[in-house]
Amino acid sequence: MTSATSALSASAHSAVVTGASTGIGEATVRALRARGWTVYAVARRAARLEALAAETGAVAVAADITEDGDVERLLAHVTAGGGIDTLVNIAGGARGADPVGEARTEDWEWMYRVNVIGTMKVTRAFLPMLRAHGEGTVLNLTSTAAIVSYEGGGGYNAAKFAERGMTQALRLEEVGHNLRVIEVLPGLVQTEEFALNRLGDPDAAEKVYAGVAKPLTAGDVADVVAYAVTLPHHVNLDEIVMRPVAQAAAHKVIRNA
Image 1 (cartoon, rainbow, N blue to C red):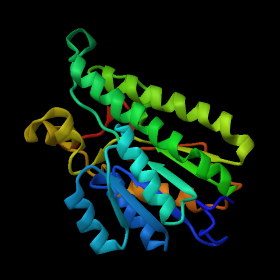
Image 2: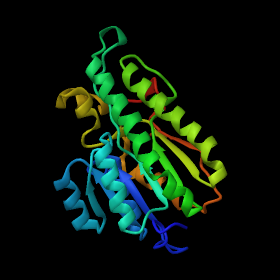
Image 3: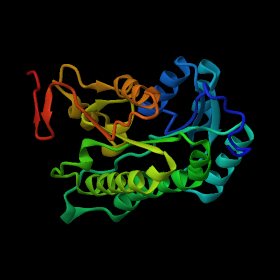
């Protein structure tokens, strides 16, 4: 191990979780802390991170994963704290639901920058540390939008297809370093902000989940993420597609009247 990871004992686990200020990222911080992990909770909103840290004991690091300087500062902070063995890339999101013929360039650029470029920058920064550890893990949260396209989803589909492609390439490239690469692909998840941020209207956001008895929750996804990264390291769950029972496929969702 290098000095960056020498503070990690054989039984200790430490993770960076991005997108930690809300939704699945926040729930993942809670899930890993409940299992005794050291967790660096990363997001842009410092106040929300500080509240989460005070409640859970996580280490709050306010950073924008798309900004090189912020990623460098995050890496330095984690290195000084003893390093990590696991990187959990949750940060991402969707903007807009326009058909391709009416696409807003700024929405597509934002989705690609956050879902793809941001994930790449954080992963690239931490790969030397994870390789040196000898049993490192990268988990990328994508979406069922990465495997099935749908009307009005072109921009989000494009970004998540790209993130999935990057994840698959990473698994092939890093297996020689004994690096475990996991992909979790959730379907319909009801969170505080995802649909609202995407559609920009509370009523429209509510309709996404209308009539669905039990959509997935952020906690459901976090439990699966935590399960995947806490398995013995030789066990790799390459990809985990998870949906609520009411969502048999992207195009078939049972809604009660």
